[in-house]
Length: 91
Length: 233
Image 1 (cartoon, rainbow over the protein chains, first blue to last red):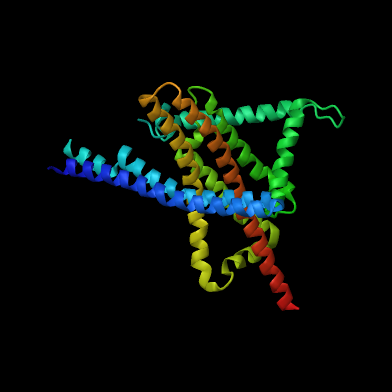
Image 2: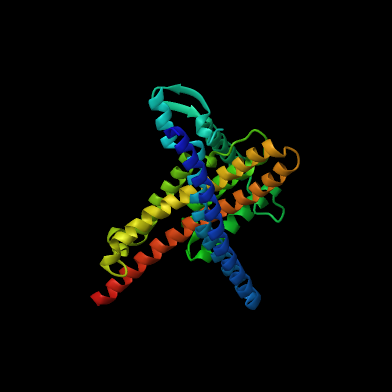
């Protein structure tokens, strides 16, 4: 196996793992926060606007970790710097 | 596959490049400004107002109320910045219902520029509220050991703002493009509808986070100047 094949294999497998794990963990966290927000809205419906706004801000914070993983895997697949370096030196 | 609208270049001369992002951004700015001029040309205080004036009043009142609920008591000072952010990102994301349109927020350069605006606006509002000294003191809260962590959080939240908006909008377009090649009939429409929802929520989140950061800066510096005046007495 030459280095281009190795880089391709490593990038594809890492991209899949990154998106997989990076979707699982934030999904667990978001589920927990949404469920506790829903139960607190059910207990105190008067506080619903405050809870909803705080929930949105918190969800954005949690979701950004998943977005980081997505961006990393997109870079690995479509704009891989190591791959581009190998291609450039071979020419 | 094109990752961002930056790669569609119309005209290039040395340092200056005119790409799809710049063209779309200027078109959106023109549309927003012209629409606002047209609506506010004939403002009335009657019982009967035009429906566009009613629409604009709803938007402005809603943004004011949201800013007030976060904790800024005079939303008139801040709506110029926060409302513009919300309207620009919202319109840029909602326009994906037009075919052939690429949102400028799907390019990292636009979102970085917007996040840098927030990065600059936080010290601006903090200093204008309580002076340079009071604002700089807020970095030393609660103790001076926290100074590097406060600085790191300032930079990392700017990065997070930029990458969050970029990643959400870019992933929406990317999912539609991938689905078009797999099942090109009904499914991309559903994902586009989901993209409209995500775009609106992201515009809301971006402006709410900017409001929260500005509120934190204003309140922290107010608190530190208050404790200082107490100790002086």
